[in-house]
Amino acid sequence: MKLKQGSFLWYLYLDKIYCLLSLRNVKALVEYFYLLDVHRRNTLNDVLFFHFLCHITNLKPRQIKMVFDMLDWNAMGEIGFEQFYMLVCILLSHQNHLEEQFMYRHSRPVFDLLDLDGDLKIGPDNFCMYRFLFNIEKQELKELFHDFDITGDHRLNYKEFKLYTIFSTDKSRIKGRRKR
Image 1 (cartoon, rainbow, N blue to C red):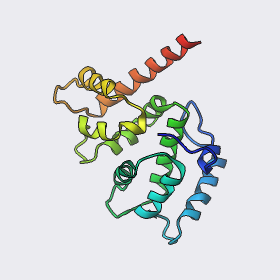
Image 2 (cartoon, helix red, strand yellow):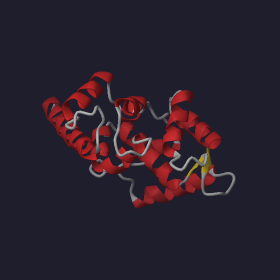
Image 3 (cartoon, rainbow, N blue to C red):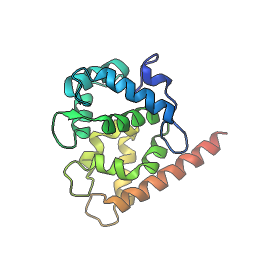
Image 4 (cartoon, rainbow, N blue to C red):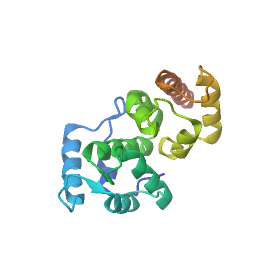
């Protein structure tokens, strides 16, 4: 997944430590959200969302629909600014190769997004569906469930997921040091 060069999001700065936007960037993003919200309901429906992501990313239509369903927490067919902001931060973390850092810093919201059925556990199927958002390879996903599924139920609870994010961030830092 890549952001298209020259799109509005291309010019936003994501803090590398906390994986958040600055206040100035959030204000610009709010204005952008209001421009996209042609119905003036403070939400984006699935059609607006689809065209927005088609315009700024190289995601396939099926992936865009999956992302919308993941963000549409209350199944109203719309997403608000909170979900939009989360998506933008995910996209920017992916663009800046900060996926592990993002998952570590925002482990609870990411866990809640991936927990589609609300039973406070993430199965390998859910994780596999959305691995393209966090740049996780299939082999890495298998290792994740093998190494961090402490309870042995083939599903990760929040504590197991948090352990994974800590380990993944440390592994990424070590890899970065070796490259230097």
